[in-house]
Length: 440
Image (tube, rainbow, N blue to C red; front, top):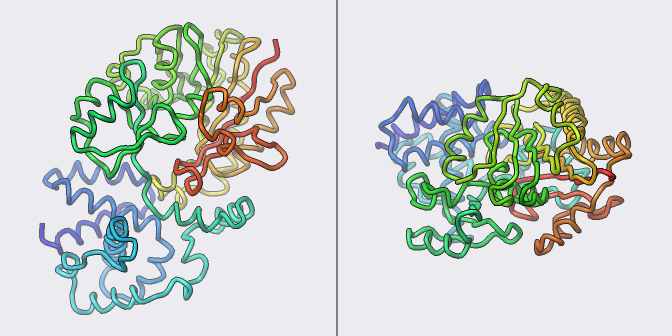
């Protein structure tokens, strides 16, 4: 593809994405369906350019007005150039810029001069907002939470997330799968915390790999794997994944149960549960029972009251812990939307708790980094439900032989009570989890 054609396509995709009418991944997928002639390299360039624009939107908005031509083209040029710079630094940390020959083939002399001027801007000359590229309503609470950790988090969020896989322990063992991937020229390392995880180098196509086709591996962030591990579901138990979505954690839980007992996958979105179907078939699990429910007080939920050994509530949340993968969320979410989510999370957790039998375990989790969706929900629940006893998440993970378990949990007044994962510390998405057991 001619460089100018590619940059123009990038500009069009940037324009479509920045309307924020739909999630960025959905917009990108739709664009690829509408342009089936695009090759793998072109798709990668388009997607990475758009996601770079979303990650650095405030900086690029600051730089774009000094250029010429349509704004979305200027943003696309900056996005493509910065993505290439990041790629170059992966192999040579001292590299100032990536290969520019291809990009220069798309630019006029005026655009080249403008890009050189943008490259010359030093970070210490920028306003803080242009350095962190976060809306102020999000930046301020993160500064208050993290202190000196704020800027390391910003750096982590400016890069794309690694690709983590979960080995299906019902079918395979991690070392054997790792060897098989290596034979397919896919390099991987064992994840440091999850006993099931492999972190893959780059972003290889997986859909046609024999290991994927036979259900030996699933794509799943290491943090998400730890949530399933924390539930500690046993053989023969009755278990509920209350907000199952597409079922990533459901499949991990089912494997720990060795496909025994009964595992309910509840969600209010039948469409999302439909995505579980092919994954479930590959997994080899026979104990999973997906069920779309109308709301958290659905009759199907009421019938299981007090009968369930383990309940996972991976609640609908802002998703702000996944900004490496979904950078558009910081522009699409609002304080009002978070406030509405808090009310929903409170109601869902209270309803799910009714399912837990005496002596059973309840886990509340989000992929948010905001305290009002996490600690505040957990503490309010504990105050309103004295029949539930809080467990120390660090101790629970240590008992499950997770290395460095204490380092995965929040400090302060709560000690290691809550699981708290951060991209800049643990190289996972941002996750939170609280654990309780119901008094006998």
